[in-house]
Image: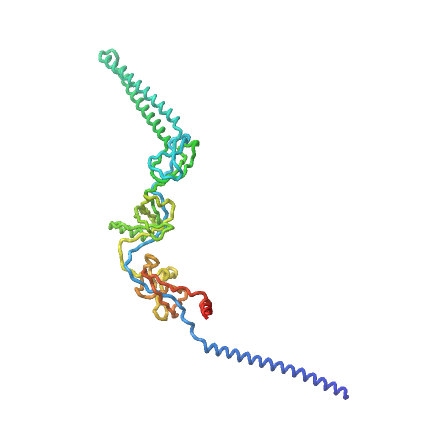
Length: 417
């Protein structure tokens, strides 16, 4: 019995120890949860203490300017020679000699190729002999006709015989004319053995060398005229209508050109051709400007930048090109006040581009500040913090220099210390 009592007591002690450890663990978990709840509550209170509306996003703004301007449009074009000839022989034969250097400037009428002339010289001699024979026969027929006339007067020959001699004389004259034509053809072919430049310009290379047989389809070389060049470009319907109005008032617009390695448009020309129809697919019309090339500076095929000015001046409002945004089919600018506040949406209609400044029409006045940097940060109705930039003489904004790399200033201070 005591032993069983001892065992019972021992079990009771064991069960009491397990419950005690369970209670200790539960208490520890409760303390941890309480501490976590207190920490989260403290963070929430701290966030509430520091919370508020986000700061206004910074944007850069510049004033719209008003100037007296003359419309100008810029185009991309390609230079072409005013005259271009593919030189082909007019008679078949063998190239006997080449008289020019590849790529050289040639004058009109300059000898470039010689085709073997001997067959044509022989043909000219044969035609000459046929002409001499025809003339001899004509002289004989004329003498016989004179005798026949005397015999006819004395009624020694019939009228029929006299008419036959008359016909023979006329046939002889026709033979002479045919022989003369054959001689002219032979001499012309002989002349064609000397292939000369039909225009003045720069020659290409000789495509066919000495000893090769050529015919009328062979291209010997090509010549591009250099006295003037054409710049072809495509203008819009508005450009065409403006040019038509200028032509009606006898005002000629100026066209200036610049090459890829040139700044601006240093070369002056004029429009001398406008096509007879607009392209219905693109709404553009082909135009051509002429430029003097007496110094040979322009080479056909070069890309050209063209600027065409209008003929009448007017007052307009201009904003930097980068200030204009696009909303589907609309063009707009954001107008801000000098102090913080919401940006105003203003729809505009863009006009000509002049040195980075775009002519605009719409609900905008000179002096109003337009956003030129940070358009993507503007939200309707949300205030922005504008930074007003200085502008140059053209009205273009002058952006401040970027800040230096971090750590540079402290390093300099450390060096002074």
